[in-house]
Length: 276
Ligand code: C2E
Ligand code: CA
Ligand code: CA
Ligand code: CA
Image (cartoon, rainbow, N blue to C red; front, side, top):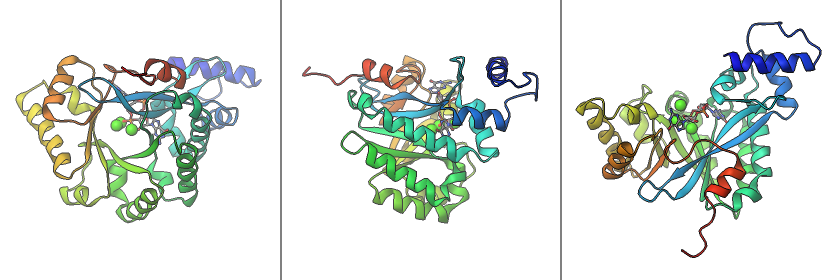
């Protein structure tokens, strides 16, 4: 994307490199950005849909270029994963998170949800990072680990071991992007998850046809049957919100309630209610 290239060009110029070298964002660019503190955490509120009160927040990684430009996760997480930098990204992100614990403590968060790549799931050192995060937020809020459905079902044995350790730490597990994978009902039902996050495509399509709506309802019942907390992602309109409340989702996330924002913005928008 042009915005990314502009930022990269500027960063290369500052480093005395040829701004035209390479086409897009390279591994070297990303590595340099990470090492110079470019990874930042943004937070998107996860609310109780009926009253809009914040219950938790999803942590979404961003890359802040020296120019101040913010690069979205979709623009650099896949590169981080394919170039072996995802552990460094996660480590940096968790450090930023722990640094903002006091700011977050001023909001009424009960949990923070972080995304864990399947590529680091198998590494012992990733669990050390999770442990540090849980300890860092002790007394403030709990930690939920989000894993995509495809990642979770690709390594069921690894997942079972990791899940047991995560639960022992007092953290919980969410299955992310639910409904777009290729897993069997049995595989899904047997995985040790606490929360099911319905992929935003089902929310955006729910009014396209009566069938889409029935499908969404069936997914919500599936989660309820397994006694999971059900979260709907990508809620953008009042109509979607109304239907989701009626269908019985526990929590909702989306631009209607709040876009990803800084810790300061989250804390001031969703501050602890004082005796209302
Ligand atoms: P995800 O985990 O499914 O995150 C939800 C994405 O949906 C976020 O995009 C969020 O900004 C976007 N979103 C939230 N509400 C709405 C809405 O109402 N409408 C629409 N259209 N979109 C909405 P984002 O931040 O660009 O992240 C993209 C993906 O990158 C994430 O998808 C996640 O898979 C990955 N990601 C983000 N942060 C991290 C991280 O720290 N580690 C890893 N491994 N992956 C991450
Ligand atoms: Ca997620
Ligand atoms: Ca998702
Ligand atoms: Ca997604």
